[in-house]
Length: 426
Image 1 (cartoon, rainbow, N blue to C red):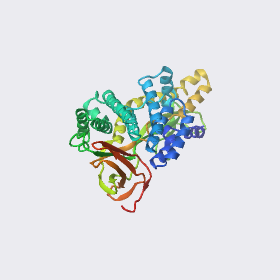
Image 2: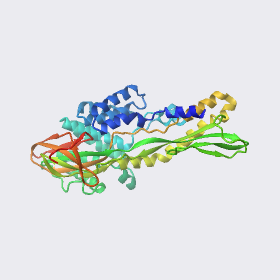
Image 3: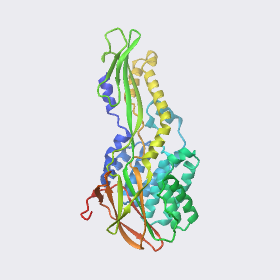
Image 4: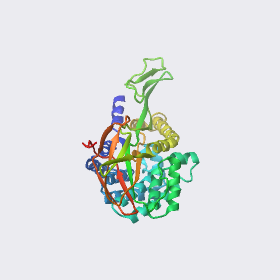
């Protein structure tokens, strides 16, 4: 019985495990492979995950330069999330409590809602649609007002998005809206001293480069499982704990002790854990027209923001997990006396299959870095050199961007994760 139940448990995939192949391909710069995997996941997805997968695909389309496709995916996901924001049906609430927390449709975290507009803005700008970018700038500011400005000072400092504020300020500056730009740059400086420019200069020709560094954290499911039997009014059984290879057997009875052949009660307490991803790139420098122009500074620690949002929701998640574990255990004990063994078996199956909800936007970077410099109008070739914690050169971005800047304008380059090569000139 135990072996069969554990086999069922091992076969239950989480969102994180389903995304692993596409996620690895994306962060390795294999965009076509990542998109192929996402296409398959979207085709197989049920309604509760489909638009989160489209969010992931939108990020990958943006990184690969498919700006039209990125806009379609990101907008479709955003429109759906706006439609369901703050809503949950009674059947969804019951099924997510009794059966699985991922049964309900995914509702993004507030920082994820803001970042959708960030990437839409970049997609519009990169394809040359300045008006579309300005519209997204306005939507970023509205979202910051909705999801951040009303928080307590402590929460606002932890959950604000300097990346979003900088983009808004930069596009205000590009339009000559100096006062609005100063407000957003001022907030960036409070959050990340040294990242904001010392002055707002709308008529100075400048280049601004954004670089993603590191993989953002992902949620994994952890389970505490137990199989209990009653002996002489006392309990005996076995615990299976996360990261513990051998089972923990206990015996509080007076008989022959725990036996896997005797009927018992399966208990599962499933909870999410947020795991930071290993990284070896610690800094980057921007090369402009063949010359290493300077180091990009940290603008936004998105991994920290994700961690803060996770910690604030964790107590409620754990409470729901405890209720779900209790109800599934109850189905194997009290209910079987009235409804028969079928309910007991069903309770064991649901308990064995229990997993935490690991859904989140998993193609986000850990950090966003920024480089800004005054330059001449015209076209400029830009790429990135990467360095490790010892400041040793690791490699360079294979992608070389061409930034076209008008006299007195602002040029933007964006470098997501991609293929890294060693350049002979470095």
